Length: 112
Length: 112
Image 1 (tube, each protein chain N blue to C red):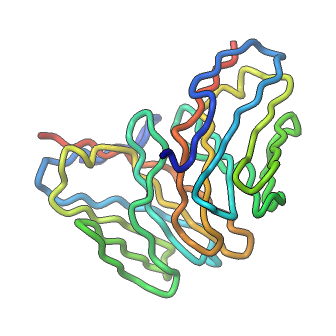
Image 2 (cartoon, rainbow over the protein chains, first blue to last red):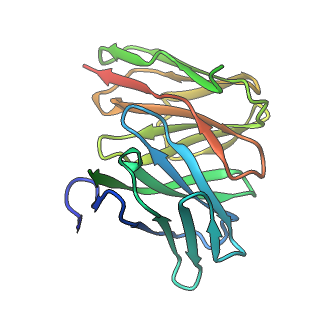
Image 3 (cartoon, rainbow over the protein chains, first blue to last red):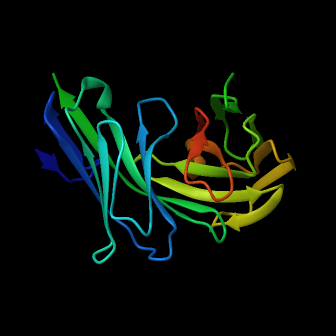
């Protein structure tokens, strides 16, 4: 299930199920939209990006969807594994000044 | 070899002190960043440098002064530390016009 409160929004998912993480962005001028994964005690790590002129991009077990009409970005993780437990951030990059700005994180907890 | 390295990893200091955090990247990237991550995991961009020049200076107190002696280094000096400066600070680098950024392991600053 998903919960939002004083802490990070948390998505609990059974191992092997698919996960969907959502993000609303604000800057329509961004050139790239990006997903990062942050494991406990580590820095954020790049997962996948999508150019602003695309609406879908697939990677290994991950798919990013971009809906510019409603300024919405999502990350789908197929067959979620325990190693996918982390905080996930969406980010936007604008080439004009190389500004890389992050959205709020979403905690994913994989239940074995 | 570590791509983006920050030192120190932990820093505990008293209010009013001045401290520096160092960052080095060996990726040959043009752009370097500093981010502050608070207790709610929000990643806030502080500064961005491109080829040793300051490009982005978000609303950050002027007690924070970045210095880039060359494009492989971006250090962060903080004067007159305050309790609210306690956070994890991340350095990152990216190639201009590329989406992917590489992050250091973070520096946990605790002001007492």
